[in-house]
Length: 190
Image 1 (tube, rainbow, N blue to C red):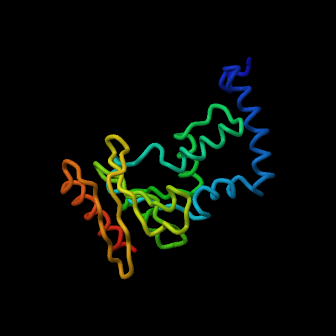
Image 2: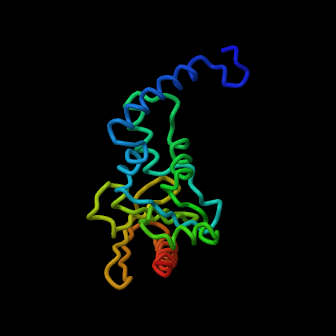
Image 3: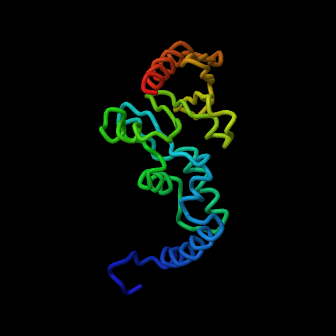
């Protein structure tokens, strides 16, 4: 508590000690912390397709799920935003904006799967990742940003064809047009 070089909050100091011990247990259980994190992403790097920096998310379904699991294991002071930042730093999530040279470099390395496509009003999220299900990796859920409501889905079929289904809701064409525009950009890049 007298060290000016660290946060002088007793609960945070105690949490750091607790978390370090739990971290070692995670490493033992999964072989490495990286293996633990990849267990939430079907062992793949996720690529997010983001055109504008304003659409960069502070969290996502994966960081929410990891944070919840780590809290259940006893970790303290560890939220979804911190986990999302760690997933970015570790390279498990590539969410450089699409015009960034780093986005293109990582895309060329391959071995990744679609995480999400982020637009102004909607997020197109990989259903396989959302549900941790290999069989649904070619399905995309359309989520309205405003209230996180699932409003439709996109099924990608062979030869880069797709089918968009959006629930009967106000502004249906607006959402459909935005989803179609982004899915076509995504398919053109792959």
